[in-house]
Amino acid sequence: MAVPIMRRAALALFALAAGCAEDLPGFPPPSDQLHFPVSVAVDGAHLLIVSSNFDQRYNAGSVMALSLPGLAALAPSTAGDPAIARELPPTGRSQIKISQFGGQILVVPRGNESEVYVASRRANRVTRARFSGGALDCSNGVVQGRVLGTDCTPARTIDVNALAVDIIAEDPFALAFVPSGGPRGTVVVGNLQFLSGSLGGGDIGFGTIGLIDPAVVDGNLTAEQNGTLTATATRNVLVAGLGGTTGFAVIPGTDEILASSADGVEDQAVVSRFGVVRTSSNGLTLLRQNDISVGRVSGVDGTRGVVASAGGTRAYASVRLRQRSSITGRGATIFNSAIAVISLPDNRLISLTEVGEELGGLALLERSTPNAAFQRLLYVADIRSDRIFVLDATTDVPVLVHVIEPHLLGSTQRLIASPGQILILPEAARAQVDGRTLAFVPNFANSTLAVLDLGDPDPRKHRVVARVGRALSDDGTEEVQ
Image 1 (cartoon, rainbow, N blue to C red):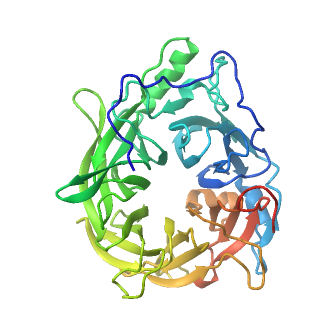
Image 2: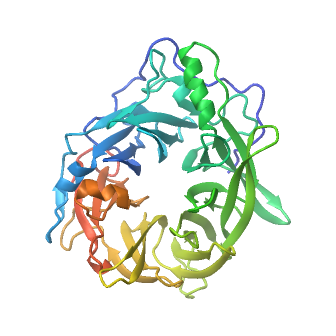
Image 3: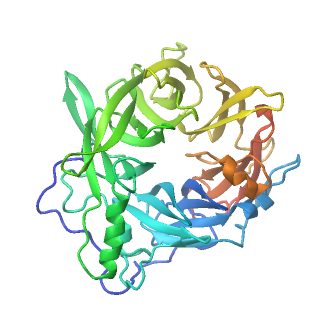
């Protein structure tokens, strides 16, 4: 893949709608249905969901806020078959239109409201919306202009390739926030596209990470209201050996992030560790701390997700292979995956456990059980098999203890369909759902949301308790079971 190169002077300016709000031809995204959802986040009493509009059936992507109590009401707390809720919760719903092909969503609390950042691959943008009082908002006071096809003003639409940015970055996807780098912290953007090259006789990727200064965006919003020019809020950093960034994890108690990436170094899977600092010229840059090799296997496709433990001592990464690894000696297949356990104090690989076919996002649940035993459970989404693998990661060699299947026995209804992410409701938000430990999985392939109940101390009893939304066919054209 060839992408990040030095900026050419002839690069066109950011295409924005002038004057009044204007829509692209076609129909707007539905306000009562998800459409190829790709990521979720929690803010207060709401779940925020990004619909990517992957098939471009509509003229925009969207972010929708759904009521957590409303979702919990659709998910039975007693034993029995999962609820199939065709309609989304009707109350507490809000929506804004954004650019298509959305990626990850990030919520940054700011007092009584939150900044909501969403990556959009189609237009190489990161949108910053406002979430307050249960409502999403992408306007800016009296400003009338909107970016074409969206509900957002130009100052709320951050171009990762603004004219003043020296390094081209494409396909923004992963997002993280660290409090360092400036008075309002830094939003870190991982891009999927990268430049291929060679170094030391081997193939290597040159990826880009973008650094957004929220304080500059604040100033741009004020300048936009005053009708003056806005400043560039992004600085891109070229990183050798990174490849396409697929995910971030902030190490608790630090200002450092871990990055998973694909195809960075030939036949090697790596998790990279960075810090964000401000340079002497008052610009943002990355301080590379370490590259942690988590697998040197022929055909390795890189790391596809990463998560850190609450104490900041362990990290877990999903590793994807193009063929069967040498761990088991089994024959070749299309894809194969493993879970890497990383010691963060000394940046080393502890173990590699083979599981699944095409793993993506991960989530950790750390808690004390009723008998006061510490429990650390790792949930991993498998995009290809439509399963959620549950591993006991209490020790440094995770053990597979349960598989949450995509179908009920004898049923054709897909409860899980191409799950790219799993989000476990934070403890602070569980009061919104009667204290239940729920998790949410955006089902990309059938445009629904799976709700999981993880409350039982026995992980073998964890299951899908509801599927919410109208299930669509893989091409998004018709409703299915």
